[in-house]
Length: 423
Image (cartoon, rainbow, N blue to C red; front, top):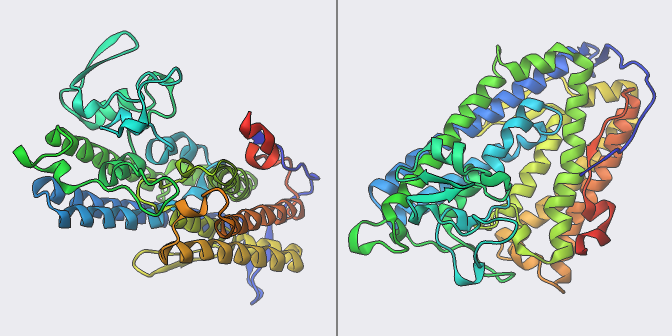
């Protein structure tokens, strides 16, 4: 669902602002830095995915508790730069058209592998919800017999992903890999993540869960596909990339893309669908990284991505700072008080998301925060929600001050019409 957040006057955005030292900063400067940071973030996502790929190869070649743990740690590390790229969604068509392959959620994990008895079987909404392709080298799809004897990236991307047009049939990306590493989280709103054993990848009689060789094939195929998808998006933001060219080719549209990403991620996507909805439903299935119990980090780094775009800076995984001309420079030139307000609200949101992260890392997991009647948990999550909603109001004011027309931010029923969530 989308909601029209604002429509402002058609004042022209000034061609240039100024740094504190008096040197001019243009829209072109701001957009070039925006594209440079996008390239750095996707390149870091690619580099960490390749480390994950090496860890997956080691797990498949030599299954052990240690190698499974190493693969999990590599997955967690890979999420840090990737989550900071999500602010490039909503305003950049190249990212929106691609993102569903790498970060779609939630998923019906029974499509991929075995699940517990409480999971249930096929539903009216999704006949493939319990397919378990790992255990079934052939299956029927839309009346056709599918040969899945070889689990390849082409099978996952071309046949299984969103099979039958069902969005919950997520067969690729970070969350499919997450499920294959952690397994189902059957702890409800109690503490604890998924607990898949390394023996799910073992050979011969040591194999648990059945079809360990095919499970390894699936994990390998999904990881290779993630790497190739990230190679594609990294190239899109390189010097000759199409996504970069689109942003730089129309400066006003480029600034609109920046603000659309900030507002939509802050409001409808993160505050609404990823946070408030879970609080309303008290449902751990609404966690973004539900198998690994990593949702606190997903929320934190999504928020950091929004702050990065406004401030025009990003710290790479190797510690290098990428920075330059920013939206903050443009806004400060037009209204210094609004710039101070925007920066303050972004900081307030990051403190609130940081409290969730700190609490989870100390043992109060996001699952537990979502439990019905857990007032402390709800207060922590709603602190983040309120900060995100409040900063969106300032983003609206930024749009107005910069003289841009009719930017449409993503909405969420959980924020705009909470009663409908229970209908």
